[in-house]
Length: 221
Figure 1 (cartoon, one colour):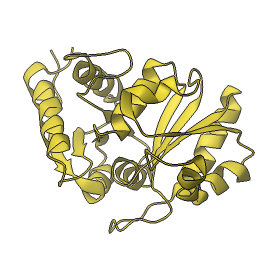
Figure 2 (cartoon, one colour):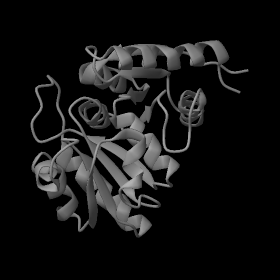
Figure 3 (cartoon, one colour):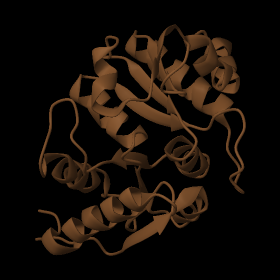
């Protein structure tokens, strides 16, 4: 049984960015709700999922949501599909949600991407609002989205993970899915950093540690 050479638990966008600089696979854990929303999007058959910073962030790291938008549009064009944007506030209008991600939208539009829908960041319930099968889904959020964006600008080896119930998974299944995802992407990586999206969210910190413990305890086949 093979095991990861380096398993690290860290926090925040700065921790995610540093791990990316070191060539680690970065797994962003933001269970309420960004990573749970994106895991649910994958349950619903999403082609690819991404995170992005809103237009304004206080995080002390470089982010570029416009670049994320361009990448999303490029992948959508290659796959012949559309893009779904997940944004905040959870309770509010689409106009309010779109107002927070104008940079992402500029990137999408610059590459001719097709924005199909903007939906709230509601975790397991989000894919019930609009079709996500075969779509590119981008979550624009203050913690998980920023951490994903910060790491992605350095190294595109960024994924998400959760321990919360998703659209199609419950119990231990979401965490085991995160471990399998890490296994499948580890071939050219020096290790993995499991990143709690915010050090101020105890649920993220505990979830990141739980996933790391599974990785350390079980290794990978």
